[in-house]
Image (cartoon, rainbow, N blue to C red):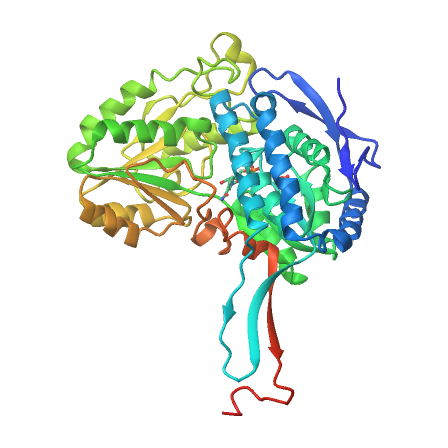
Length: 492
Ligand code: NAD
């Protein structure tokens, strides 16, 4: 069985612990490899290597840094199929989706590379004569990246590539369920010729490796994607040392279907939004809000289609829904199903593990729908992160938007309507970082900001040019060429 190593200072090295953890395929529990169970000392060595590399990387002109990213994008493109298969094996989602995940990494590489020739600041007039003023972006230093398992490639690249083009160096800690993809990503960076120490990977648990990263005083930025619960802890620790902490957290996303909607289109949307990635997306459709007058027919249409979804190993292209990522995740999803039943919601399909044939060896769960859900129920309020859809009812647009907004989270949202007035009111009034009109809650593209409001984060945005604010400091520059002291606001 292959043992994978940490990547520190350009070398592949074992953890000082001498210990490893196992990585299993959630579709059949096959052992895929072992990874380093790292310690604080391993983290400190990686941060040291990153801090050393920062001294020269920050001075490489941004267009030259970008050349590495173009190369990384090209390599990812050439290895897309291989990487997608690795991802499907360790995470479970179907191949079509892992290909999309790798494609998002490729898109991000080229987007970040393009920034190498922009990284715009502002040039503005100044109030005194013979004086110039402008602002420019500067790198910050060593950035720590702590990532979840549901997008093993896309999420790390959303953080890594913009950080690099801005001139920072990086230590990455992937989720323990999906370390292989990030180790492969480091191999790609190495193949592209990234200088030693600019990119480092340390695998291991969140408690040990994650905490050590956040506490290391030489780490200046922590970019975290994961649960709101862990995000809060990270913000607290990072806040003590005034680190910049970017948090992309959970969601409880809803799709509204109005009475004037194209119901067939809305049906395709909710099937993809709720059961794609087996519901394990931060943007997954977890609530469906139906206008009262179409509630019955739409629920019937939905039920018929959901029961036909084909579950199985994601490597088999005939399958539409893969397993949950782990036994623990399946237990957690099932607990929510029990909670929903106790709360009085009506379970209309699913509600139990799927164990037919070879699926018995994996962590599959039947696509599940609850109807008769009310806003106060926990299944309408808490993130389940599995193939469970709660159906709620709304009397009109105001009621639908109020229901949608009645959550602690605010990541993605969707409305299906043919009425342009309703669509624009929804765009204005929905409290979320992302709103889709006549599209499902999932499907973000990398050139638009990604992130959410309320408990979904702390105001940062990934992707787009907005991510540059996470990985740069602004410097304002004044050049006075008058040859005398000029006092702003005083000499008029
Ligand atoms: P998680 O919070 O359990 O773990 C995320 C990462 O944090 C992992 O690498 C984990 O090892 C690490 N970690 C755990 N405890 C830690 C600690 N005390 N200190 C430092 N690091 C620690 O989340 P998960 O189960 O891997 O992922 C699912 C969650 O991620 C969901 O809530 C989902 O909504 C969220 N998510 C959000 C986005 C987004 O962009 N908003 C995207 C994907 C996933």
